[in-house]
Structures are given as C-alpha cells and as structure tokens.
Length: 86
Image 1 (cartoon, rainbow, N blue to C red):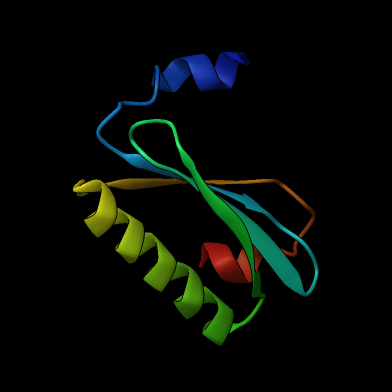
Image 2 (cartoon, rainbow, N blue to C red):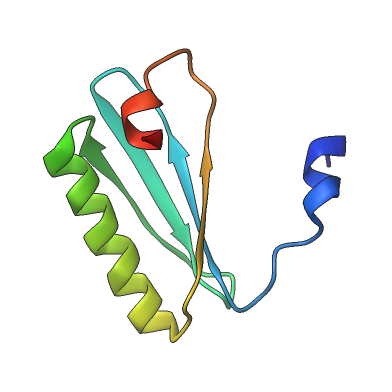
C-alpha cells in the first residue's frame, strides 16, 4: 500500500467504493459493495450523459447496499478525467 493510501486508513465496510478507469472518450467503472462483491464493470461516456449514468448506477448501489456513502477512486490519466472530477 502506498504512503498516500496509508494516510487515509482502511476503507470502512459501510461504504461503497467506485473505481474509475479514465480514458479519452469512454471511462469504465466498477463498484465494490460493502460485503466485497464487485458490481459488473460498466462503461460510460466522457460527457454529461455518461456522468449522469454513473451517478444513477452509484445511487442504485447505495440503495442496494443500504449504505449512505460512496468513495470514488480515479486513475490519473493526463487531463481526460478533469470533466468528471468537476
């Protein structure tokens, strides 16, 4: 584990984690549920409609997992993730 990761401590079991692989036109995300199960990875466009699709998927996972918090982890890939970050 990196020093930066150690700074924040372990991920709590009562949240979901959304890992996002950033690309130029299409990102991919995987959602880890509180029990450790991974929701089937899915792609979404690097635009507003794609971001709304991501949010709907995360909101659905929050309801399904009966948790109120999600953490997002983005792969640092040049400037391609800036729109998603904002």
